Length: 274
Image (cartoon, rainbow, N blue to C red):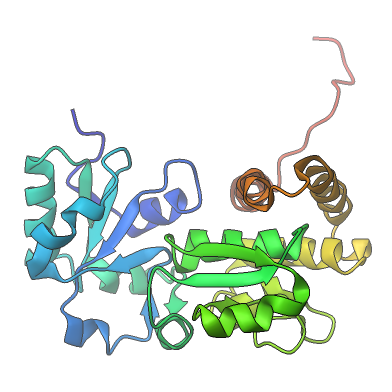
């Protein structure tokens, strides 16, 4: 039995993004329309709407799917119906991209995405032994920008050559676009480039990351905790940078969920007996 109804609202979809129940988001707007819009739903992947047979094999049957088109009309509905007939847990975004935009929900800057990631899945390269910023940035990229992005870690002197030789995007190293700017860190830069800096929960998370990564624990009470956990994970990981990345993602998933859903919750030992 399918878990998704035929349609899902923009707000309900937003609440699923960057959670363990996050669906695969497939944008099936016609190419000419897609290339004219300024923003993309976070984590969405464009696919040619009339070529379902060619890309259905790229979908993960174990994860639900949300299909979005311009206004939630025939393109997304036909594809969702076809996917459901083949046993996929698929839903259409009610009202499509138009409803998402009208609801004021976050959008990824399409021009920035196309400029930095002309080929997708994208490949990103940075220094080995990540600790804070170099885990926070891949988390943001995978959860909001390119869910299929790949990451490689090399010794610092080889980042630039690796980027050139493998058409990879360098980050969090001096002299590249996605790096520290003034008192901000690479995570802040990514948010700014891709148009996500104004999303309140991501902005709150950015302050924590910045505080932990730049020894400014006064910026956010949570920065000290992130600093300690990040260095502890790094010490346990040794040379397993990708294993560290997987474990680190759980930390940022939890911090983002806290910022969205639980930041006002208080916890203390009961002061009175029941």
